[in-house]
Image (cartoon, rainbow, N blue to C red; front, side, top):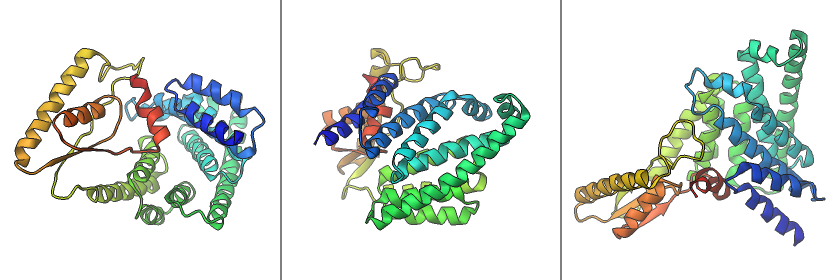
Length: 335
């Protein structure tokens, strides 16, 4: 019972909007004599925090600047090390192993395309080459270990869509055959829901945004995007006119380039535009009922749901990732 309560606390700590406080909580509880699987969970969540910081270092930059910023960010190594520690704690944790492999493969690929920067991280070119070779060996070992962890999960009776999706993610990181990888994702996501599709796309688009893994990543992205479109068409209310909203979150504190300021004036302006758009949809629908679809991120999503509620229009909240991860990434910073 105590272990169950601790595990729940680990997940709650990760949901904090303040990543620094989350790290402190996780580091404290992660060293408190937990069993291996919970220590792995703690380290994995710290790896996820570091990964979020790493992405924040480059995702808003122009495409030509993003790869260098991604390689130079110290959070890349930090995330990789946390996931590696997690997998070492529990080799059954294929999630930790897969993320360790992904971050290691990203580091290897970035080092290969920007050798001058990579060499500058080391005291000599010889040392840089030795580090790159060690990284190659590490990726090979991780790939084999993750493959066995996935097989072990299947042997234990795991039939979750996340296991199937993880096999496809592993194929992307370990194969140079675009058609094979595309087929892996097609089979894995055939019966998956929106959360699985979004999680897959989010990870793949890290690779394509940084121009990594070439045609393999491009084929995976095209397949998953097509599957997501097909899946979304199945989400329908009978005989209703669907109104789909997507828009910006309010800016997180400290955002360098303002986009949707978290001010009363900006929120009121956005709300007025949403009201106008919903009224236009109602006019087009005529006598047909409306049904709204949106996420639940702080900002435009919540304004859309509020406007629809005031007008008596039912809406669906569609969370595009795991609930805890969604809260941490897309809700809490709005206050």
